[in-house]
Image (cartoon, rainbow, N blue to C red; front, side, top):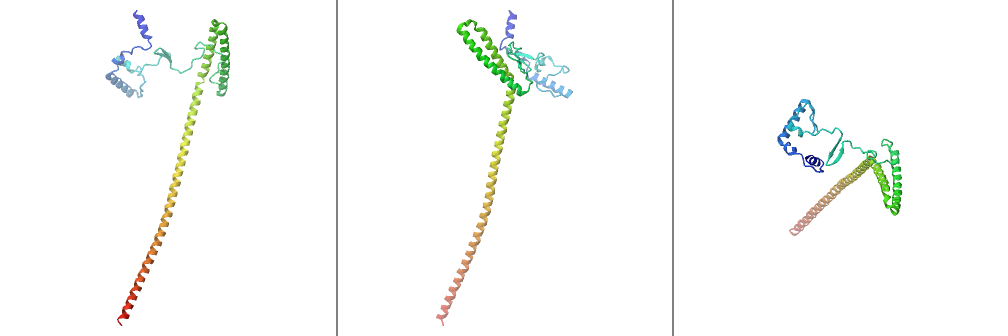
Length: 259
């Protein structure tokens, strides 16, 4: 009974967290582990990252073992919450998944143009086969529904093959998406640069126009000032002459009266 409970606990989709998370990961142990890593770096001359595991020549106390990053799995696979993960991000083949392959396998190392044409051709053939098998499924369901299992299996195999071809072309899709994104970013940068140049040229022309206009205004104002000054001076001289002439006439009249 206990073994059955342990097996059930180990296969539970959300098991309880291990007890060492709150018993071993203390501030004191973390400080000791950091000191141990610093001593090893000073002695070996190597720089350890947060994911580096201390080698065997740097003995770690038992209470600090759980503070070390776990070593990579020897098989390259591990299970988390019931899901199996692999260190190598590789797409499993149809043969590995136990699905029959329809048509010839297309090597990924082939020329991109030829591989692209082959993928398109294979997907077109599978699409036509899918439509044909669907029509056959309709006919079987209308005559003898109990015999539809084989035709459904054929449709499933076609779907798996189409999905496999699409997934095999994901790297090409990612590369093309990245190229498109970089081209859009480059075009946006060029447009912004072109707009900045246009604004700079417009501001430069405005400043040049203002400078030319100010120089012309200053010359015009200077000329008008000189002309006004000349008129004023001429007016003053004329007034003085008129006043002197009036005074002369007054003195002349007085001389005639007292003779």
